[in-house]
Image (tube, rainbow, N blue to C red; front, side, top):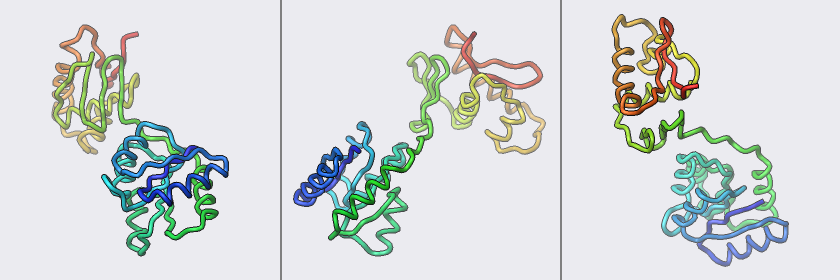
Length: 225
């Protein structure tokens, strides 16, 4: 396994790295929380061993930020902060396990290896693409042909529903439920009006239309065949 130890006490990190290496694992250490966050976001690790008290960014914030970004690398807190509320905070931040200092390395190794055996959690897709149209769900931005498209909140949600169903017909009733939370027909042209506004932004400035009306049924978004 590849393990990242996020620990500002060099004696502890050296001891842990030595133990993991002897057990046949590849381990490295970073002492600053912000630096560790960048590494964890851009490098594939099997397990993170995280101290709570860190310079730059504390361990709770680090793990919380990772989870918010869609990174689900298993994380075990290795810390001297050990009250019941502290442990609860660790799990609520997204930690998978919690071990108090002082600790026995054999227990840490067993816990880390158990986390490494867990099946990987598939991160939810945060960027949707249809042809050259891109919708970034995390940043709430839309682009086509690398040109930014300004969308109102309802237009963004409407486009998200359509793009999540790429190539499938989404009926007017489905859109009323998913975009407006209507479970009845309001007898208005709200769907048609928003579709027209959306089409003016994502299709009309470009040579190829992606949003299509399916007569008497609904709408579909897809690249031309």
